[in-house]
Amino acid sequence: MTILAVLVPVLLGCALTRVVWPNGWRVCRHDFFRASLGVGLGLGLGSCIFFLSLALGWPGAALPVEALLVAALAALYARARAPIPCGFCATAPHDPKWNRLPSAAAGLAAASALAIFVLFSVMAPLGESDAWSIWNLRAKFLALGGKNWLHAFSPVIAWSHPDYPLLIPASVAQAWKAAGGASWMAPVLVAGLLTFAAAGLVYSSVEMLRGRLPASLALIALLGASSFARNGAAQYADVPLSFFLLATAVLLSLEERSSSAAVLAGLSAGLAAWTKNEGMLFAAGAILAQMLLLRRGASAIRRFLSGFAPVAAVLLLFKLRYAGPNDLAASMRWARLADFDRYWTVGYQVISHILTFGGYVVSPVLVLGAYAWLLGVQREERMRPRNRALLFLLFWMLAGDFLVYVLAPSALDWQLETSLGRVLLQLWPLAVLTLFCYVSAPQQMVKATQKPVSKASPRPAKRAPTARLRTMG
Amino acid sequence: MPAFSLRAKLGMALLASLALMSSFKLLLDAWEQRARMAAEPGIGPSAYIHRFDEIRSALPQRGVTGYITDQVRDPNRAIAEYHLTQYALAPLLVANSWNEKLVVGNFHSALGPAAIKTKGLEFVRDYGAFVQLLRNPKR
Image 1 (cartoon, rainbow over the protein chains, first blue to last red):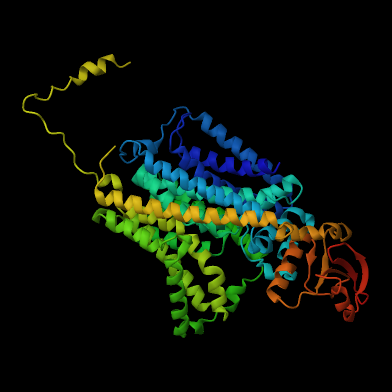
Image 2 (image 1 turned 90 degrees about the vertical axis):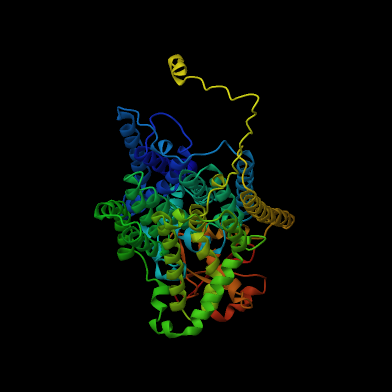
């Protein structure tokens, strides 16, 4: 029952992406993109529906509603008269022949990450401290509290941050409610799906934007930060948030090819805010990026907001009616803006953490910096609005997090030590996407090779193309 | 297969080898850690919360219960244990105070209960693993 309760929202998301980007009844490599995106969007939508069902007093209604939505989307898809071909296939960048070695290396990286995730989940099926004192604790109240589910936000457990949004707790709670108990499986499944959906989304989006070879390398770079899979297994909300930050950025990048992408980008930005409070900062940045860098018109912004609004409404209901006060916001002091020691402390720690990020054997800044230097950045990529928007989003979040730390409570060292690594992890998939969008693709650096033509044997004349066409069905 | 330039080959090889090395390093560390844990069963949060399986059935499903511990040497550990106890007993609320009618005693030795006698709590039942149910007669 747990698996079914997780599968239904996943199917909802996958059905949604299939309806938005149809491909008849065919399967193509872009279904990996649809599936990766669909997993996260589906779990997010499912959590919103579950929370609403609790708020409306119909706790058992969420799964049937989601199943009905899946059926409705499937029926809508089946009714489409003309089998519409995959739009991504038509606009895919030119790829050289399949490169086995990088693909094999990417497969190894994925297998290693999966093994890390499984091992840490086996060692700590409850996750780490924030999992059982915040996210899954909340899920227990939502799932098993019955009419007293509101105790999830009781001042008795104010230390559990009852203001934190509910994407993770509601997703886990929905599965626990269906199963009738709080087993280890639901949180591990939800964490695993979002972790590997983020990895899948990095691969598939780089493949669409730059080609297969950069996609393999991007996946290797992402999973080389072993803390990514490890933190996923910890069942915190940072890796899930990284999925939605990445998804929003990818969807904004695709808007030139598909107007529906803007609606899903808004939805994803809303789900980022529904995952962690930092998501609200990101959503604001996404709107600014569209206005200032992508120079999208009012209609595009409206489409974005049309996707953002429903989730924002759910979040607003939660914040106004149920959530407790935010302890970080309550303890911020504007006077700290003038304390330059704090800037120094935060800046030093941010740089130290970036230099040693992710458990790389050599600093990832050196590794990725060397890669970027060797392959270079073409001028057209530097000037491309999409790439500038990605960079803007990264720096927007870094600046926002920096400011929060400067304004944060007096135990600054403790705050930095316990959270800065995870805050940077939230931006990691987006950072990898940005890098691989900027840096030249390896297939753009192919040596020109020409066989010398012998004077004794002139080249045979090409066969007339028309003769070939007549024999084709 | 296209002939990549030397720079491209170097860049790809550097990235792939260092990234994979990082990943395998953690994998090996995790494997060793798992082997160590297998040799020492009964530690970790999931084993810890099972200490409260029996007392959970004696407590109301919902409402608020109190909590007391003899863990005074390590405040961080004390907080972690309290949070785990709350997780184990949810959806029952566990207040970090003995000012409730029923109080869950989370002790670490047989000497623990003696330490709480000054609080005026009455013993109700022992559930093994130094977990006890206590009553506050003043509530």
